[in-house]
Image 1: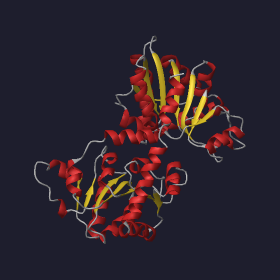
Image 2: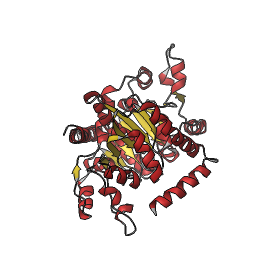
Image 3: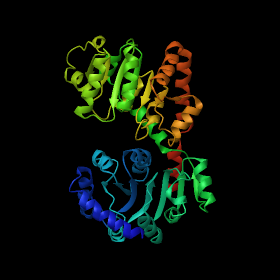
Image 4: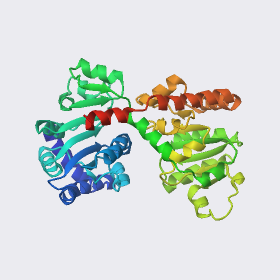
Length: 412
């Protein structure tokens, strides 16, 4: 039934590709996968395959890939994505020898892909559990591992209509917490190790490699700065009015969506509350001239790739998504030793819960709760300092998952 469902899904995806640009990219990309495999992987190559659904999972697997490149150059690294939002951003990633889409999990696709890729080891990151791929690799003696996975009782595997078959195909599962390990053990799966989340190792690497941003330094000056990362409209409608009343603070906004429509919405909201703003690309283009930072209260980051370095300039950070899709990358901000605020949709994010418990992050549900948190930080520098230290200490104390996974998989 699973395979029949996949064939139906594949057909529907082909039809949907005629109407959706995102689906069309994936369908076309899958068509190129086999060509790319033939072109870049030889029969004599030793291949390690990493699979990520999208960008978040890629970042969790990246520390393993980069260490593998250095310590075991005898392997070729194959990286696949399911989502176009991951593939399109990282298709030129230099840490892999080949980046492509994973085909739909039909038996024929699986056989063709594995014949051309012939991996010795496969690493599936977090939530990727494709039954036909996993079963076929298990039967062929290919070592398959799950990294940074996390399990909850409400997941499909543990329902009466679900199946544990995909999970039983792994040689080992490196899970994020004791809850996941216990849940799997209750269903007879004991080849597990609690290692934490490799994402923490990645954010530490990013912090250590982050380059200074002189334009941001110039904008911030000596003022306290609030960094709103990956923010959405519901977040912006809460924090922008607050900082209209606290103009001694600088405001940096890195929206999750940087479409012209959204940028103009932010600029309009800032203007309505008497906050002058400038886009990052505007000061970048005028960088040959002194920038009058005191005349601008908000900097709108309308480009990608800056946010992880910008957090260092904040006294407090916000991570958006908590009023919709779910919060984004909280550790990316917390690693700089600053408190992190986010909206109510954060229950499924382990680091967010742990940071709340240790006093390094705080949840707001509306303008009043946001104001209460910020008022406390502004009026009590000691509370601000302690919250920042709690955030940074949590990240550093829980790092090391990548080392544990790497040594168990590649240095046996």
